Length: 211
Image (cartoon, rainbow, N blue to C red; front, side, top):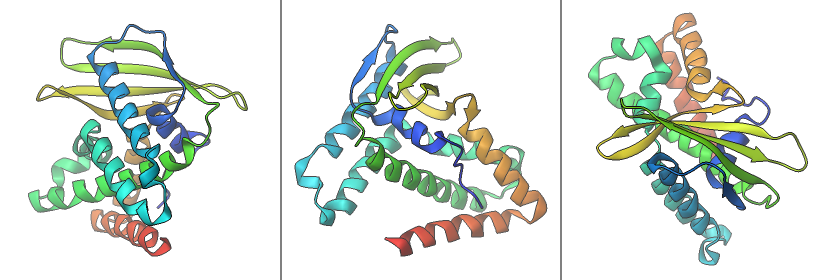
């Protein structure tokens, strides 16, 4: 199964979270502040000299994973990515799927984060923030890249237990959740849910073997 690789898709997904040279034009509210907080914490880990040695890779990635998991609602992302199929799963299947999906997504993030932040010419502009009364918010950013066209990265968040969680990311109009939903739906309809789980597990095993 292919993980999304459209153009700037995954790199843009991460650039919006952790690039140096941050600035903003929108008046910050709580959702935007929370996204910035995550950026600051991730950058601090990546810039920590004690974590840059190859033998510190596992420790560095564990720290990044902890920070990202506090901001991203991976459970909500997983449910939305499965769409109508989520309700058909047994409690045991749901319990198995969320950690599996979270693991796969976090691995993609961390891998791209470590590569993306090496380009200090890139900047993130915070251009818009909207918050509705139902506890949903949008934080819009623009990635400035002097070597390529600028592109937008939107973060959709929901408020849960006094915390703002990212539940979807929109890159140049393409939804991360919708992208996964399309792929997952295709595998489930053409094969089965069990086949999807096996493909996700295989992807993780291949990444572990490549380390």
